[in-house]
Image: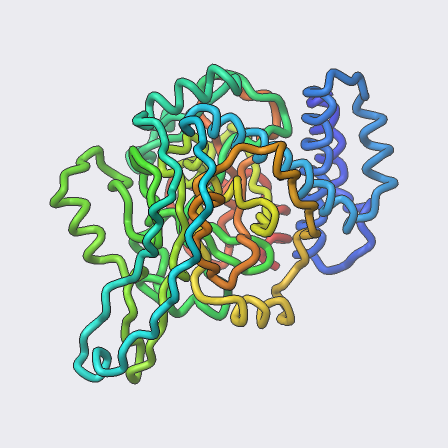
Length: 424
């Protein structure tokens, strides 16, 4: 069935006959959404044990408007991530002790005197005496327990690509069906109005190969996340373990943190003061699926086995999952709302999700801590979805680098027409 689905979308990608639009960039977005609709629908049928064939799925896709496909992809992806979050809760959480949460601390406004003196106040980390305790497990132990329950996990090692710049690769251990969310893309998320605040601007990609863009213009920077960590912690965009080396020494990590511009108030051009990611979030840094930024572009002649999927996580009613969404938003909702009215904004299928019944979920870190509101209701990020069955192999993601820039020697276009439409 998966082979039949691939044949269908290859045909539609060439003809575009199912999509009534002349905007090439939007056309490619619709084609990608159509692929994701087929894949995630296939995964749902496979997990439920139903026997829908490719032709039935194709008819369903043809009869489903683009906007509805977006909504359904979001719901199916959310359902998978919710399932993974429950598995990770089972692995990591001790038996919860229900206590009345403390009220969120009052946020103090930084003193103007500090700025006048050229000093930067220390970032405030809320005090949370009632945070639920997690088990003392390291990342390898969490990954092993996750695989036992989920059927797969991810790990990092030297890429199998025969190129000196290949570096670290992302590998799956175990097996996942087509349409499975196999990884999340962690890091700090920037809206188009915030590009100028990215490290190294305007040449943001010179020393950072872990940037990825969504169709709506949001950019996710995976570099600060690093390789994760062996704990659950309040994370506000500080650099984690080094990305390109196994050297996790305190000196190396301290140097990376020193260079990070994301966790302190700082002066930017003419004394303008900005703030980094709003207060951050209590995130599970041991998550075995928060490694999507390590997926390499496939070598010449090899097809990618994962594709990116935009995912919007709505926090209201979903607090029990927040620790497993490895992202923080840079800036504030006002800047993001400006982008919704701009030409780059494409609605990614967000809709309100009903609140989970209180008696159907375990009490999590966020619920017990009642962390202070950041003013952000959604986290707009990306996940990686398997385009075929993947089993004990390296994961390859089509980078679709723009033809308007000089492409590196290791890069070989997977589909030239798709790239042209993507960046048209």
